[in-house]
Length: 238
Image 1: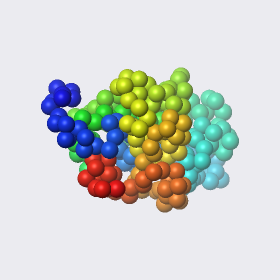
Image 2: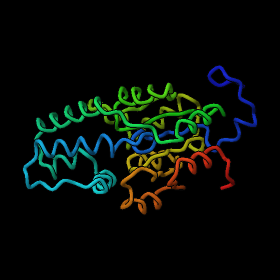
Image 3: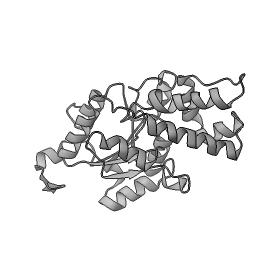
Image 4: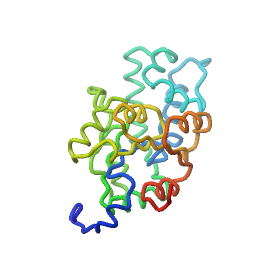
């Protein structure tokens, strides 16, 4: 058979655990929170918040994102008004535009091999589609489909089910054909609603306090990109 113009043998096609993977962007494919998103938060706090405001640590940032979300945190803890939230958003976008994260070592090779064997790659992230495309363009690679975050249509991204349901329809897939690879709860919530396997990753810096939560939630958890690659490509017997 062919896949994107390349011949793929039946043996190669069968040597992937899932026909499609839905991968998170930040801290799953790209090492971005410690280098971009968290520093953007720190900058806003230093410039706009009262001097006595207690900023989250990097670990606390991940805990907040696991148990809640940034908009709730901004409203209930930071006490930002709608206008202040807009200012924070534009400061974050400006920061994201200036600082580009690196892909985790080995992740590009994993994606290329998964695709070579006939796999379908989707990205579902709370980063915007243009930021995701820009990050991947540095590596001369793009996923088949991107489900990025939109302030106008949040229901089209995780934790809502639209990305997986759309992927199933687009590529004629069943739930068993798909795995969600992520480091935070919104992706896993989406996956569980759709009956899709959850694969956790904790190789990014700052996940220490939520490792247990990830392990309890997911079918498998990996602390190295190599371990994830070996599992998805069925190079191990697990």
